[in-house]
Image (tube, rainbow, N blue to C red; front, top):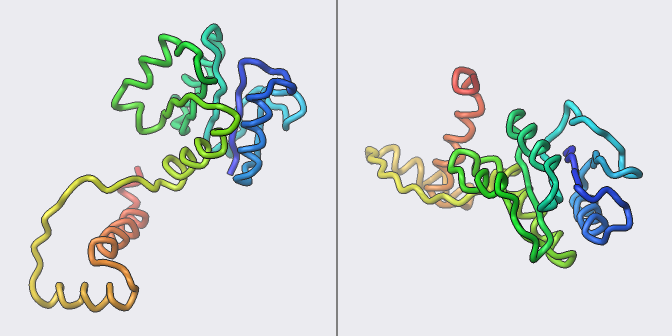
Length: 178
């Protein structure tokens, strides 16, 4: 997975930069960055999976990077060190219900960097989200028996089996992908 790491403070000795680079390396990310010495890249690579931004309350470039990632529909993790003020434009983005699908804002410390990065990767790249919509499905007896039999063989519950089947069907549906 390729992650573009943008930092407003582009010095390699800045402790939060070091903590985030280590956290990204720990998850096995191929890192591109504006930070000299870390696969230096000023532009997003074509194979980019997500963007991690270490912002600064005074940096307008951070907002530009976020806007560029939104335009390219890439998941964005915007980080500030604890105690910093959230820039107004980033605050507006984080409150937008539409952009919450691709944007996550968080405060962090060097100790919490790994946990926050892992949660972001799980939520946005591996799509492990909670299932909070209830749905009533009416079935005939034969289909219910099949679901019970199949779920028992796969050692899962019926709801998970139905979700997996729908996910597989969705992945194969070319019209939906358009």
